[in-house]
Amino acid sequence: MELRQYFDTLRKWWWLMVLATLVAVVASFLATRSQPPQYSSKTTLMVGRTLENPNPTGNDIWLGQQLAQTYAELVKRDVVRESTMQALGLTWLPEYTVSLVPNTQLLEIKVIDTDPLRTQAVAAALANQLIERSPSAGDQDQQDRRAFVARQLSELETNIDATKTRVDELQQQMAGMFSARQIADTQAQITALEQKLATYQANYAQLLTFLQGGINTINIVEPATLPTTPIGPNTGMTILLAAAIGFLLAAGAAFLLDYLDDTIKNPDDIRAATELPTLGAITRIDAENSGEILVAAKLPKSPTAEAYRILRTNIQFSSLDNPPRTLLVTSPNPGEGKSTTLANLAVVMAQQGQRVVVVDTDLRRPTLHRIFEIPNNLGLTNALLQDRPTAEGYLQPTEVENLDILTTGPLPPNPAELLSSARFHALLEALKEHADVVLLDSPPALAVTDATILARQVDGVVLVLDAGMTRRQWAANAKEALDKAGVHILGAALNRLQPQSGGYYYYYYRRYYAYGDGEEKTRRGKKKQATGWRRWLPGAN
Image (cartoon, rainbow, N blue to C red; front, side, top):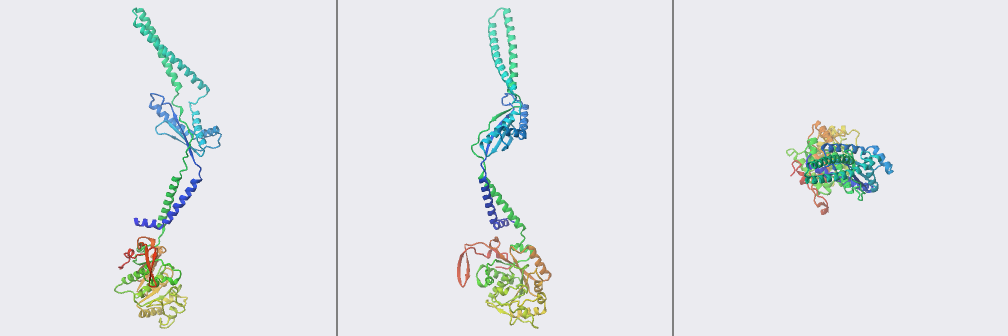
């Protein structure tokens, strides 16, 4: 798939993407508007006392991190949740998350709720419940022991200071002594005091370690605060995300629909499905009644009429040495515009100065008499009742000079046998003597065998395909059915092409010109210009 085809798909389905984006934006706006504001409160806890230890070891830090992971899982358990609800008198808890700060012993508890007071209370209660389940909580006896140890530490600090002072005094006195006995006694007192000082210091260190606690302790580093600003819902980001999702889903659906759509849309599709050249491309004719279908006669200078003239030219160029005098126009299925194409093709051929006879050989669902607005009382079937079939008396003139039409007449019960008869062949030869070109409008090639029967009796066949409606397989099957009959298929005509179908055929102007009754009428709009698509048509100038 080429890059141009991606842009064509986006241009074709732009309305779906815009609609999906608008629906997503409106839905997300209404959804976020109905949501209450949300608040967040966070508390941070520290596992262990490595920050209070001047010389922590790597083992202390590692153990603290492992304990922090354990406490993080404990907060999520029902035992902590139920105790928190019981402490706060709640029957449920709002959403909360527990996370570890990477490579630290810090534990974060984050609570999100619509009530800021409840958010703060739940965060604080979860932290307290976790602390109560750690050794650092203890009971009343443990608290009394810690108070006693604190008093002992205070007394030891006093004794240590007093002992150091006494040692300094004895050392100063010993410096002024001359008696060996006095010096020895003083030295013995200093030694005894130093031993007592060492004992005091050792006891002090042991008590201080007990008072500070071990590694398996929890302290609140950052208490839960009362949130004042809501954190959500983020209306702008939600709407933007919804719009992006809606656009991407619609774009994906557009590409999927284009991928699943196997209808013929351009000459490349015709070439891929049937290996036939494209003789012409005609836009959709917006006609309120059948009489307005003859665009080539009503608006001979319109872009659509020009497209039919290009189709005429390419048919003539397809066999320069032996131009076709009898031409069959058919389509794979009903309703693909073969009769409209044939009628306008006959008009532009007659406008060129050729004598043209149109024969409606669709003896099942005739259409041409309605397009040319003439009666269908007598016609082809009446002419075939003669021993020597002739069109005299059954040909009807039209409003277009040099153009006559032979309608079907009364419909027979056996169209296929009638069209394959020798009388029809003789009638066709007689028409060739009367006209320069004989155009036959046949039933669809896939519906009945009439088209195959008629195709054997003409010089060439034009296959009409409806852009955006005719499936590739239908076109391939129609071409295969005609090939089996050994007929000469000149090419395909792409009918009912939409101007916005892409860069193959058209580009846009601010104004286009449509001529009627000899007056130039300027209309604002889009002008379909044939230059962009003539390069696809063989033999076109």
